[in-house]
Length: 310
Image 1 (cartoon, one colour):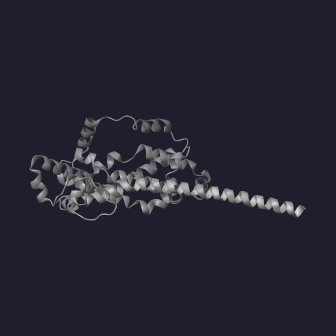
Image 2 (image 1 turned 90 degrees about the vertical axis):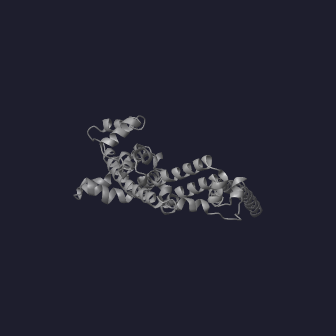
């Protein structure tokens, strides 16, 4: 009798487990379907931009979107790459991105490490002054006069030094450094290490997720720099890539407005402004997007740094 009861209980538990498993499978299918749909909705605009950048002019003019391209027209890319100043602008942007990101990281990490320590004289005043810059600035005219007095007009450093530190990224670094165990530094000081050795030999190696994330943010900012180039570069050969692409697009649109459109279209292999816009987006965004796969393993951890209460 007891065996029969036990068998019935076991069978009932198996049925309940089967039902739960079935409900779980259905829920998993629904969740995966929703995530796939959301992924498609996020990826499709980028795919559409790339597709329109080399689609034929007839499809672009009629605003037709094909999931699978049938014809290819590279006239938009040819128009951009045949710009005589393209390589020079690319060199300027690479210089600003590489050198600027290095300076950004050195200043930000050093400042955040110092300000993360308790007992620093004038720490509250310094932090208040830093946070003040997040909400107020001197304005455009004082900025231009300052850059002129420092001799930074037509100087590539004008796109690096004025933005050597981002206040928000500095606060994120400070919050991360405050979460590190104090015993690490105490043991290093007992062994005779100074503050610089502690920072570069102990703190930075265990801060790779944070460093990779902040470096990626800075690299994107420096790569997309165009405003300071337009403001402070009177020499057209010193314009960054983003400013040059903006100028190419603006000049072509003005060309279509001022001259007979049919003549322009015939001269540029049926190139239309919509194709040129999409090609400009691809050229400006693709190189920096290629950095993400190399930093993805750090980015997943580092992106949570801002949620740490420090």
